Length: 217
Image: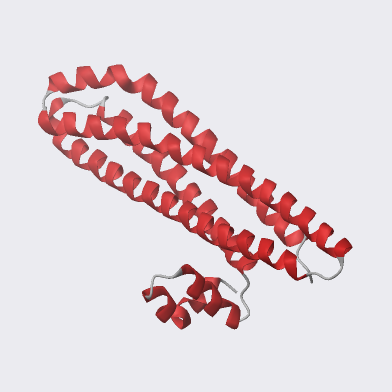
């Protein structure tokens, strides 16, 4: 069951703005931090998929602008501007999802480390500590890939923003000639961005599998 279905039951904790209160409330419903982490990694993966598709769509719109005559420029500008706004929204969603992953992951690792002190059996404690280190290592790799993919969005968005503003201020045939010079560069930027997004998505899926495979039945 998706964890979002229980969000309403935790509204008081959320309004209080306290992550620990939220996680505590979720645990009372039988939802552990590990499950929240997996759920948020899945959400981030989905957000990155949507962002990848949106950036590709925005690129198509941008390239279409450079192939039209001046009479169509206003209509194409409006279309490109909408694509840019959607790209901004998708980028923000990705960043928000990554922040949510980081929040629950740090809470989980902090709790895990504190609970190591509760072991009376030294062998079990060492094994749990090793598993903590392995999980932390996999998580660090995941979040590094996610951040790198997210960082790729900024220069692409900046290029789109510049071109949308340029079109807004220069709705004439001369603007078209200047725009064509950025085509190859922008295509290359988005190609790299899509590749990074896909790498991050694969890393997220591997992390989800590793957590589920190692989960106690």
